[in-house]
Image (cartoon, rainbow, N blue to C red; front, top):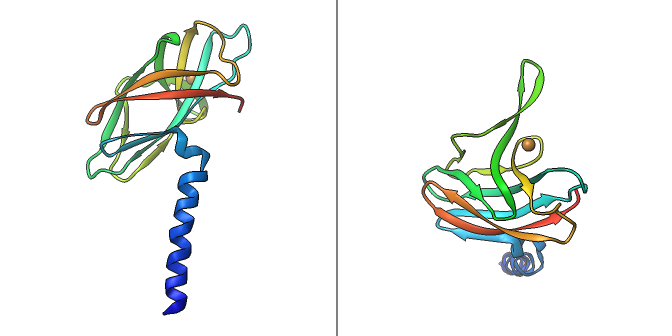
Length: 152
Ligand SMILES: [Cu+2]
């Protein structure tokens, strides 16, 4: 019995440590059952005209939701893209119908999968920069997030 209580206390304390020490927790945005975490944009080379971004979306609700679009003043145009294999060739195409996040699921955006393209940014993204963007979900509505620019 004593051992059981100790274990519970241990995990209780551990959960606090994660809440306060995890660097990810500072970059989480919650609305309704949707949690958006770690919005990230890649450092750009000086003459490149397109920036790349990613994030993680968790759906803790009982119904699926859909990321419809993303807008930001940082670039002239912003769109969701997807990398996919088509006849053994990697292709990149714009996602027109949004990205579905099913109940209980987590969708991780990444350069080799779903990702965000920032066309004609006002200036190339540099390490340490950050900028605002608004995500529009079909059910959760608008969620405003801050993208942090880092290498990777
Ligand atoms: Cu792309």
